[in-house]
Length: 182
Ligand code: FES
Image 1 (spheres, rainbow, N blue to C red):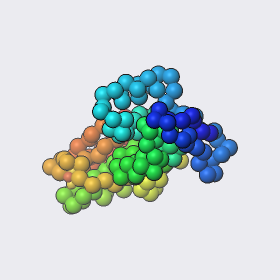
Image 2 (image 1 turned 90 degrees about the vertical axis):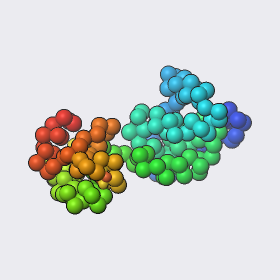
Image 3 (image 1 turned 180 degrees about the horizontal axis):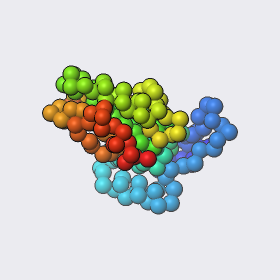
Image 4 (image 1 turned 30 degrees about the vertical axis):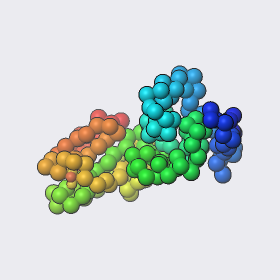
């Protein structure tokens, strides 16, 4: 589907993605969410400057930032879809595909690696049922990825589960930790 012209008078942007024409895209920015976006934009000197938090609103609402959502954000902010995609693909915190309910990030950079981070990763992959990095578990609950230094090198192995930061994770602690994220 497509929306009307942007506030800056730009042409309407089609939000239909190839292969998804049978699933109409439901806009994120309607009603209360649209009002929140408007309030957000007032805090910045330009609409473009509110791009990162606008994308975060999308991810909070949908769990990921789809091509259709990128087009919607572009239209709301008077940007091109290509520009928005460039930003989304630059920042790894934006998910470009659906992920599990609980997104697990394990630091495997050298200091954590030498302290056994790979075994922590293995434990997560096994106990969540994900099996492989970046693959969502069959029950849709978990996705596990490796990330670069999380800034807690003295507390190997640090892990982020959604927005929670957990230090000193060992393979033995993984089952108990996962009970908190069902
Ligand atoms: S190397 Fe793992 S937190 Fe810095």
